[in-house]
Amino acid sequence: MKGVLSERKTLHPLEIERRELPTAAGYAVRALAREICITFDSRPDAAADTARTLTDPALLEQIDARVGELPGAVRVAIRPPATAAGATIVGAVPLTDAEFGPTPPSWVEAARWSGDAERRASSFELDVVMLLLARSAGEPFGWRGQQGGRLVNNILPSPGHEHEQSGASSKTLLSPHTEDAFHPDRANLLMLACLRNPDQVGTTVSSVRRTELSADERRLLRAPTLPILPDVSYGTGHERYRATPLPTLWNAESTDDTADLTLRYDPAYTPLADADAEFRLAYARLTAELERVCVTAALAPGELLLVDNDVAVHGRVPFTARYDGTDRWLKRVNIRLPERQRRAAEADEDGYGQRIVAPFRAVSNPPASAGVPARATARTAVRLDTTQHDRGTVEHS
Image (cartoon, rainbow, N blue to C red):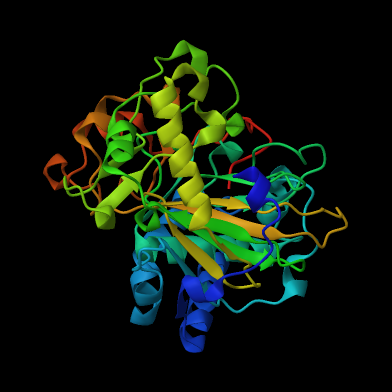
């Protein structure tokens, strides 16, 4: 896939569902985020020299309590993708290039600037915007082992990581993948928001529901054959855990219909050499089909890309980063959709010890009878240890 996609510069906006966030609704989201930030900063116990963080319980309580004040058009625009393409472009949250300052050199700097009220107030406000939008769609969450457990991740090129399979890379193709495919608590929906993209760097999206596979190929790929390992953003130590073979494909409704096919796919972190030749051929066929149906979207500032993480894989074409403050800068939120059911077998996976930060799930955690295994909460980190050091320097996107 790399040989073809690395040269793919053609954009396919007509092949991806497009929705418009009404102008008034966009300004309403920004206004509510600004009001929440002002209220948060004006608390009697808020010290002037204390950096603001998205994990503050008072802030999260405000977001959860007030998201219902947004116009109904917001929820309509942010609903999951409705077509077989598994992706939707939503335009656009109002913003200007000047309000965020230069693109930071790493996610660590981006997080530090966002929390500094004197330096990047607008960036923090946009983080609140992201959480309001994500909460309109479902339950936003983060990962304890990724970007310090932050609920809103910054995706930007970083010096020294140009050739990695991570969102901090630039010169290499970021191979199509299911986000956090290794973990049973992975997102149902990804939301990517563009702050800056002057070079029209394309995000690739490929839906398994647009592929054409034989019955034998689907049968082989449905069998739990190989594990998927954690990506580089989670550090090391996963060797201590049991590597559980997983199915690559399955049907959400227990049918044999491509229309409800779902997948877990991350070839960069799947030990394909351990499988027999028959499985490798079927996997290669799936890879070729995902390349064939690939569409590419270059987000403009303020635009959102919603990716159904159960249906579509995503990646990014190569580009040359300048590291001069003008490079591509996206923000990302993982979203759980409570109405979605996971396969029952996933409740037995340990997720290689990785835990999620899910403060909103603590507010409205559906019962096991709604399709969420009761054991899932054992993997959930509801509160952050704010003294924890940041772990990892890169991230998938």
